[in-house]
Length: 476
Image (cartoon, rainbow, N blue to C red; front, top):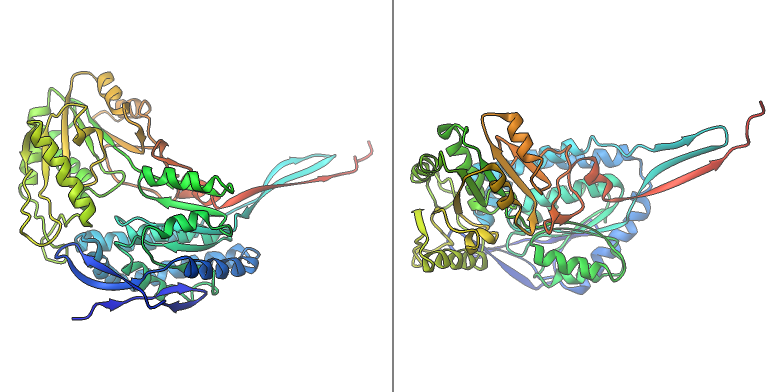
């Protein structure tokens, strides 16, 4: 069977350059599609289209731009079943989680379309009227990861075009299919050139960062790549928004209801096979309930099916790509080599097609264990024991990352007290993985730069411009 080919969106037209990249289904390692392998020429064409469109789109009333975002939200919802199935085939996540991502992207765009960019009055006196207005930055380059390709694409497109910017979007070469199908569906939602989507190897990213006619980079991905983007953008002071890695800690206080939180803690780590920047990657459990809770999580894990996300009953899919699969295996092997105890999992079958790693739970490894100190980004959960709350806070904060975290307790006030001492951009008390379209999302320390979502995320695509009018003083 020949793989389906997908085309880029440049200047309102679906195009290709006759050079192709294969896209693999991580559940069986079979090629399921081909996308254009773009380089400097295609990037130049996309940026030129975006620059030309910016001249008029930036002057378009916000209500017109709002309608375009709302149309995109409606198109995604109308085609959600098709997009869900395609997403599972290239990303690996089960259908239930894939439809959650697709519908979530539609809802996120719809919600964000309601945001405004109102002028702010700084001074209104007898002598002076001063106001701040927001003007669009210009042409935006959006670089999207492979773990949530639809959500992250929409999260960059929606605020960019609502603000009056135009965008050139690059999906991950591992998961470009759903994004290019989305491009085909939404190509008429805005004027030609407002939204451009091109595909290529990772080498296309640095070309975007260095492009002289791109004004802003919005990137979601690893901290290592984020540093390179920041360095590259510094050469001509491009604006940047970076949503980077996290080694997110959960703290379970001794009054937590073991039966209630065991399942929630499991899914806070293993949703999307652990491939979430804000997944719980280090879980600290008070020593009074450690044995009971760790046993309850392990017991729950034994009933969760790992397999092809397109098959009924699958709850955890494969790791998305071979490179990440090999890294997860390496981390697990390091834990074995150091003699750490496994409550569940730890052994994979290399002879089975697909990038499958069984659910793996490690019992109380030390803080310097690689499986604790590094962001795993896979189906691994290290559980650690603590004695005092202050100790747990200190251990949670002892990281170069600061993206998200959670506190689990029967006393919400105490949960908030602990949350306020954690050095992260987002902290949940008694829930996990909830992001609001109206609340800013961004990291502290090496987990990011700037914010996405909410009014603050929208403002990232604008410059403040202050206009001051001198008035003649009114006679007494």
